Image 1 (cartoon, rainbow, N blue to C red):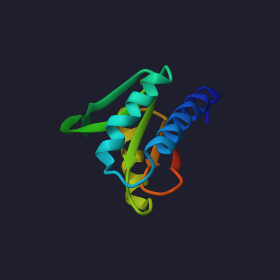
Image 2 (cartoon, rainbow, N blue to C red; image 1 turned 90 degrees about the horizontal axis):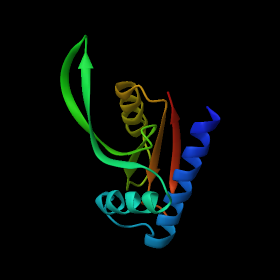
Image 3 (cartoon, rainbow, N blue to C red; image 1 turned 180 degrees about the vertical axis):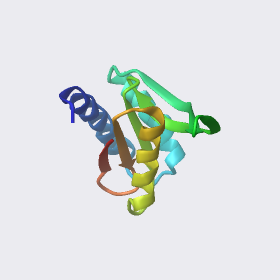
Image 4 (cartoon, helix red, strand yellow; image 1 turned 30 degrees about the vertical axis):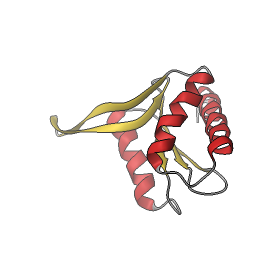
Length: 122
């Protein structure tokens, strides 16, 4: 992974850990979707929420999807509040990376006592 992306993803992870320490596990995913951008901005990062992306197939737009969070136009964050990550969560982030042409995504799970973190590189 490019060092620039590693530094940025580490900053994001630090922000997410801080949020997890303050709120703890147990809330619905939507609570963390509102709170994490607040923490990321507080930590000096440029954040977009619910960014709409177009999905193409064979040169045709076939749909649209909203990303949970995009940081610095470089890293996608997909938030979960689930018992465990599963293969569909990883596939979801990989699909978003492919659709956007971005290289790095973070899958964050706020449901456990320790923040679940998966770095996904395309």
